[in-house]
Each structure stands twice: as C-alpha cells, then as structure tokens.
Length: 547
Image (cartoon, rainbow, N blue to C red):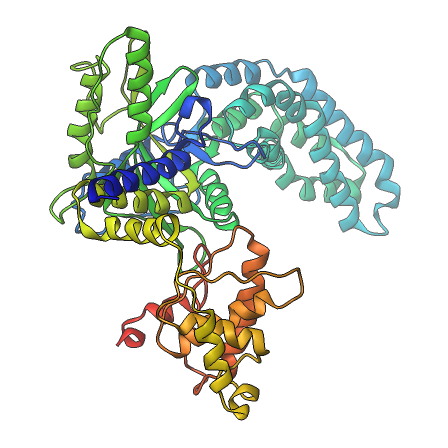
C-alpha cells in the first residue's frame, strides 16, 4: 500500500470519527453544538445575556480587551439584575390604585375588635398581648391588601422572573412590613394607654391616621419602582452547578447565533474558567484567549441551503480554532469572520458584530444575530475534535507522523500477520530463577500468567497483546500491575474504557499500589484521571514537581 493511499485512508478514518462526534449521524448530520437553554432532564444548560444590559456591556468590554491581558469578570448577587418591563409597571400601578379604603377599614376594625376581646387577659402578660395585636395587623394586611394584589400580579411577574423562588410571592413578607410599618411602630404606645385607661380613642386615632389608603398606595408603588424580577447570578449559579456536577462538561461563552429552521447554533464560542471568590459570595470567570468557530454548523446550514436553492456554496471559514496573539482581542478576530458569514448567507451589509446592542438580520432562510449566551457543553468531545482535526491537517500536509501511525496499523494488522512473541515470553519464564518467579519486582502480587503478560508488555517486539477471561479472573488486577510497572520505570501508560465503573476499579487499585511504594509522604500520586478535577493535579503540573 503506497503512501498516497495510506494518507487518504488516514483522512477518511479521521473524518469519519470527526463527523460522528459533531453530529452523531443524526438529523441529517445536524451539528450537536446548539444553543439549548434547558436539557431534556430539566437542567439549565444555557442562559441569555440580553435581559441583563449591564452584563452584556461588561462582557463586550472583555471581548474587546487584548488577549494578553486579564479577560476576567467578577459575578456577584445583585450585580446584574433585570427590572420589570414598563408595560408591567403600568399594570401594577393600576392594580395598586384600585386598592380601596374599604379593605383598610376592615384591617382597622379587626385590630380594634381583637384588642377589645383580649384586653381582659392582657394584664397577665402585656408584652404577649401587644405582640398578638401586631400579628393581627400583619395577618389582616396580608389578607385584605397584599395577598389579593399578589394574586393578580403573580402570573405576569412570574413570566419575567427567573424561577418560582424569584416570583412576587417571595416578597410578601416585605410588602406586609411596608404597608403596616407606621402603625406597627405606634401600636405599643397606643395599646399601653388603652390597657391602662380603658379609653380606645388614642388607638382608634392611630389606626385611622397611620393606616390610610394614600400611604398604602405610596409604599407599594415605591417598592415596585425598584423591584427586581430576576438576578443573572442565580442563572449563572445553576449553570455552573450543572457543569461541575456533570461529567466532562465545560462552560462556554457563545458569540453570535445562526438560526435555521427550529435549530439555533452559536457562531463562535470561548471556553470559560470559573472560580469561586475568596469569601464564597460569587464567581470570577476568565475567558480563554482563543476563539472557536462553529464551522460544522455554518457549513451544515450552507449545505442545506445549497441543496434547496440548487447552487454551489463555499465555506466562509478555513479554521475552526483561531489562536490569538497577545495584541489581538476576541472581538477583533471574530468581527471579520462574522462579516464573511453574513456575506455567505446573503446578509452582507445588513448586520455587523457590534458591541452596543443586539442586532438581527434575516431572510427567508436564516436569522443571524449578535446575541451572547452562556452555555454548558461536553468538553470531552471538544478535545477529541481537536485531535482528529490535527490528524486530518497533518495528513493533508503529508507530514510523517499520522501517515506512519496508520502505516503501522495497516501493515501490522491488516496486511501482515503480527509477530508472535509467545516463544520469547515462555523462554524468559523458563530461564527465570525460582526466587524471581515467587518474588516479582512489582508492588502488585502476580501469578504466573500475569507475570508473563508483564513480560510481553516489556518486549519491544510486542504490538498487540490480548488478555481475556470471565469476570473475577484478574483482568483489572493485571492492568493495575502494567500501569504500576510503567510508572516505576519512567514510562507513560494510558488506560481507556467505555465504562466508568471499570476505570474506577483500576484507579482505586492503582492508587493503593502506588501509595505503598512512595519513599516520601509528600511524593505526589502520579495518576491523572481525565475529566475529573483531582487534588493532585496542581501538584503534578507545578513547576517544582516538573523540575
């Protein structure tokens, strides 16, 4: 098999797996990376930044910074909030104006009635009696004024709130305190006089002058003028929680969007590194200084449009990953690419990637937008995509690494019979002294078959070794011994499995074995589990350890 054939084979195999990772071969190979705000399981997987103008502004400020600087933003509660809309504010104003004096008279009447009924027992515990009257005030304000108002406003307010916890009913206590505040402060003095003299005139005067319809309307309107219907921090917190509790999930900032049919794709995306603030009251997130283009999605839409319109199309993007120089900004790099996409979609001149506001342009086929989103996506796929794209790029440039890899696979497995090392392994075993057979130089105890497997692994002529057996026959134990032997002899070892449980077993066995042979308690565990944030990662990658 000649070099050109091997190169084409390398490209086709790599492209096959690249297409699978990006599309799962579903929906006519529709790309998997889309703007999805909620998973099928009900987890929040994305959020719009448009409802929070201040957040949108600050994000664009970071995108405009030179990538060599600090691309970070602090995210704390109540920093980026969303107020109620002017239309809803007008509805609330009308509902508050509709509060009648009759409702307030009912509150005042119940306070007087309760005070009169219970005055005879008040002398036994005056403080408890005053507190009881104040509770009646709060309950009646809730029943007659606040609760009916909330019942009418809960629907429209909940539509603008992030979650049920942010609905207006969570503010009921605060509203009751606002309406009842003046009278509640005066009640202890008025009730004390009533208890001492039996004359209720001062109590009646207090209820009539301090609980009026005008004051009630003013207090409620003042509250709703500054009412916050949603907090971006709560949305981002749920996203971050989903990302850290899921497996291989990563937070991204999506830049721009392309809607085709009922599918909405990000145009560009940037990984986000998230850390808790020192006092734990917020987050600090940092953008990675290179830009990913959702090339697969853009090419897919162009492919679909080309088939419908019976015309040829060319991809506007040549690279999926754009690495920035320290002087460049993410916005600076994305802007001309966005312009190319718009031109290809027949929207040239209608839209630019502006930072001042969200823009949209559309035709009968697609909608192009400059909107920003936070989103969670599988980062394991991202790493594999990068690897396969690197392999394809090297194969097309005819670089020797990838072609040599495929040549070894093809010639050693498909065209030629693998070289057997069985006799060499048996000969090595037979020549081994009895003491070496009993006491093997490894932290993991091994039987004869497992020692022979380790011998085969060490043999430089070995290419493929198959170890098989039913459950419980020591396969995981053998893998542990192989990995430990590699670690102790300065060799790397990659353990792969399609089952998390199998990796968990090997990791546990290997960690236990390595801990038994450490010469120093401060010597780091040399095991890294891809996709899991482990305590020893920083120690293994620190400058001190690497030196």
